[in-house]
Structures are given as structure tokens and as C-alpha cells.
Image 1 (spheres, helix red, strand yellow):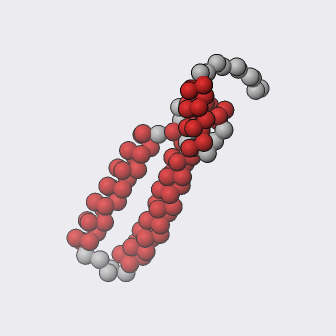
Image 2 (cartoon, rainbow, N blue to C red):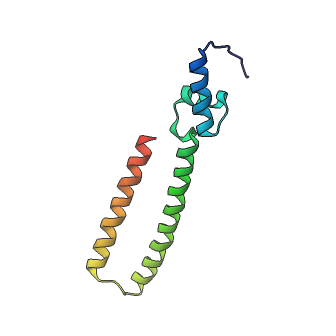
Image 3 (tube, rainbow, N blue to C red):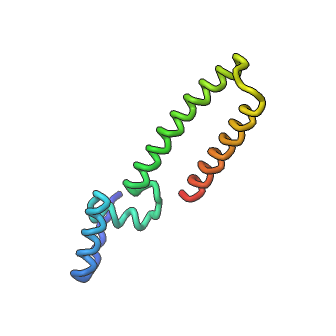
Length: 102
């Protein structure tokens, strides 16, 4: 159910609301709802960055599959395997930090 609410703003406040909404590419109402829900994933810039991160992770997954295939072919040394493990752990930790901030 949608409800209407009238609010009073000064001309400066209205101008600032319209400016910030326009910068984000949303309507005034959408901008106010984003502020109320306070969910970062609702913001267009954050959604775009999350999509970019998701694409990057998919590319990393493809690389990991290739590495696994080559590992099964015994092309890597134990040092290579350890370095890969460290990098994968770092990636996992960084992604966990992103998730916690959202």
C-alpha cells in the first residue's frame, strides 16, 4: 500500500534535494526513500560497483578453474600452490569486508 506524505522544505533545502537526486539519477521521491531505508545497495553508484566486482569475481573464477586444470596436470610447484592459496585467502577476506560494510 502506497501512502502520501507532504513535507515542508525551504527553497534551499528543496534545491539541495533536487541537486542530490539528479546527481544520483533518481527522482526526489526515490532519493528520500533511499535515505530512509539506508541500504547502500539501493544507491546507483554502489549497485554499479557491486556489478563490477561481481564480474571481476567471475573472471577470477575462470582463472581458478584454469589453474586447477593445470595443477591437475602437475604444472605447478608447491611454492606456486602456496602463493595461490595466499592470494585466494586475501581475495576472500577483502570480499568479506565489502559485504560487512553493506
